[in-house]
Length: 561
Image (cartoon, rainbow, N blue to C red; front, side):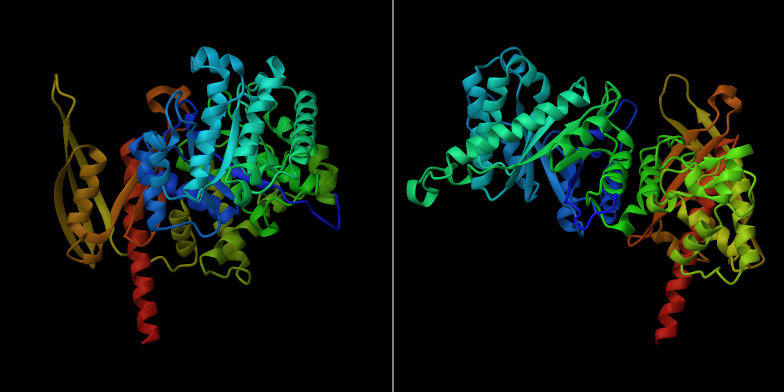
């Protein structure tokens, strides 16, 4: 769709809060920070970080972002309205919200009278007071507010008059956004469209009726000067496989904010998938969501988040899946090679993906060139080397390697293909011995490793609380006298994924190891049917890449002096 004007939509990502409620998904503080920074790069305006005060992890997350703020996005704290029969000023959970230090706060409240009387066990009038008191208190503390109307569509269907009263109350209290939530995920697109239109018409009429009410300066009444039409948002769940469709329907009916998660992660069946919503809204309907160059990062961001949360990417996901633009043999391949429009609804590069023709040796070469440039390596004039790298990637991916979230391993692969991979050390062999003590949960591990550095063989041993920890300790012990900077390297994360579980204990394992030096972080990957072998590969490459970074930094300092 081509237009002279692209209406602005505001994206609101809740991967770090709603997304983490997915069964089987768990993230550390470091994971949350990495995802938040990746979403910041992607240009997401609002990033919901969690519920500070609900758990220590979320408290620490917001504290760390105060020390190292995001560059572009607004991080948002999330909380419920105050409890019944209290005051917002005395509510401990709201104090934790204020301590999080965010400019924006999302408050959710009850829209469905059933939840008020059966869930909160309070009156409908008190629920309205809870909404009013909470928003007004946060505004008095200098916070801007987004009101999430929980179970909005179900509440409206059962008692439209009361559901609308909850929105009127939030509007009168000064909420700048009113977000309609299909919390149970059971609403259909035609219902969403009709109800959103009704809400916008109703609230517009209400705001017009009070347009001439004196301002707060004249009356001293908080809220009357803010009785203007707030913006409407949409928050949908996927229990009926309608989350994306419902969000699109709401936008076309007038909603200006879209809430969702990367890859559609979320409780039960998930949330609206931003990786599908963004390109549909921007490329198909002409809305402005993120910059074009940020849109080309969408596929990489999707895969990055899936690796960080340790869930296998959906290879067949629309737009960002590895198979989204894959063509295999026959008429399809022939047609696509003549004109990609024959079997592709958009250009894959628009979302950072690529066309994959299985029989073509050229498939993906442009991606290798682009990725090499991101590491400061120009391969455009080195076509033979680029093809060698591409073929090596294909060979390794067929074995189970994935480089989306293991860029350090990819960089080492490129240096090796170009003949510039430094040989800091060579591991000659290692052994790991574990003692399992019956009746006790703890186990001790002893690793012995033989390493060659500058022609010298070093034999070292170290203990750890597990085989990988012992192996890492032994390797560092053997190398630290030659490379003192290794003492500053930390193994910050360790993830294991079983690739072909149907083979039982013979399954192939992929290991991702994240390392850091206090200033930078990098991730390496190993794959093997032996989990220790896979771990060894990733740990060794983690140290090797850290030494490479150190040597490059030292060379840059020397060149500038």
